[in-house]
Length: 262
Image (cartoon, rainbow, N blue to C red; front, side, top):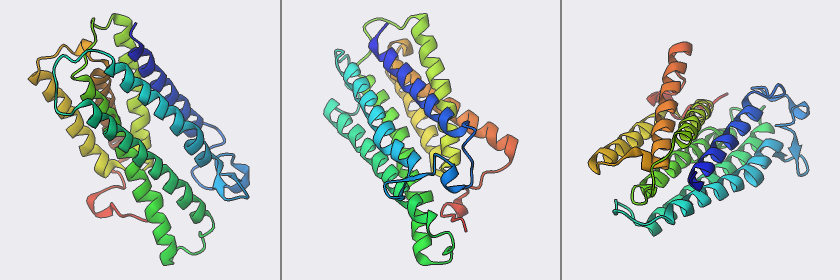
């Protein structure tokens, strides 16, 4: 089985483990409960939430390594036809997306820490600025960075197909990874209040990949990352729609994009 399939499986497994540890941990609560919550416990002289410390020092480096390995694995295959971006430009754009995600997580860590000590100052300008970084800028950079990063990997693969078609087990792994990743991404988008901008981003990304597949008359089974993105983006969209139908309309609308909690 091609090493790309193993890396895709590893990315999916890692995202599921992180999601389970965060969303389904019995110690996790939606409201801050202080030092009793290990995710919100402050470290480094009581300034940085433990969960944010893990995101910056453990989770992001692991994802960066896996994404780099995935790009390098795709890039080792011969070029069949060029499509849109050169290899170097695609790599630099992926690096830029990783920088956006890192900046977003750093801003989130800082703003969460600041908000923790300003909950009695909700009417102040400083609190509103911290909330802007917390709920809007950091989530925007992180969520769109993740979507764009996977999209760019698929674009890169359009010029580097597999030498032989995926077998049935490879297809199962890619589909399973797309389903798991899509469910996790949908909840991350919902929790991060990113429906307003992630919904059109996902639709446009999936539509472009579908157009490219038909335009170039590609056999999708030679393109694991493209296949993954199509499943990933589709499952994310479907899960968000189902969530809306089950729970009513989201908080995110055009008029509430700059929503701030009191």
